[in-house]
Image (tube, rainbow, N blue to C red; front, side, top):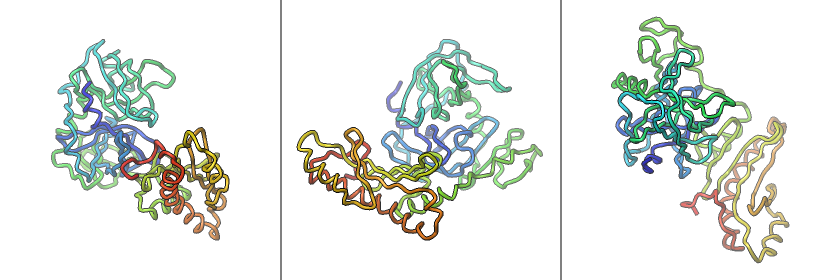
Length: 361
């Protein structure tokens, strides 16, 4: 498999979880599953270098489970990916499934075609024995010629060696139909007449096909999420870019990676892995860490990783008297982490964390 293809496969992050997508240079579009981005009109994509970009969902076809995304950034330097003309496959043909399983770094799994036309709920899929896991959905499945023959769709829960892909013929048909696509709007393609619909409606204005009520709806953030994202925005970070799951965020402020998440439905944690413990001359560093002169934040060590953390009981957020102060403390933690990792490196010879953004050190 051509190693350059990796540059065209991205991870999708949003408040509902993660998935995969891939870039089509000829069309300046990213492709994924509809079910991966369902409930969102703006999501973040991330390359294997942890660089994130905001993208808009510009077309969804729920029937085919395909969605198209557009980014404002220039991706013209990426290599071109070829789509197979028909997507026809044969039993035993070798395939490569590319994506971000479980939200982990970029992965390619090899396998073969188990069934070229597997009928499931009145739709045909390409079945493969290549490893397919949650997070792979929306990514490309390549043949031996580095052509995309399918879009990874899913696997049957608790069934080994059974992954499925949407034949590329469906995507080819969509791309032929959308030459006049308005990329500034969210478009729903009618499954019956293929009309593009931009205004929320119960029925297709062209053929009268009933549309699902959920297509135009966006997921509403919880009050806790709104509280956290207000703090993230105050740090100068777009909250949409920071989302990595339900009430979970991860982003870089300067060189430091900041993580925010809810634990046991009781506590909100803001934490940053800032440095690695040195291999010798530990006493001065341990003395500094034990003094803990970083209130209201705590310094801690797990294995050889140094963390700075801040914990809030969720009930305190609901108290107007404390909410503003807690929000300011979250904001300041990000700046403190970015300051402290340099201090520990310069003063005690600590290496930067492997999670640090190297080009910001």
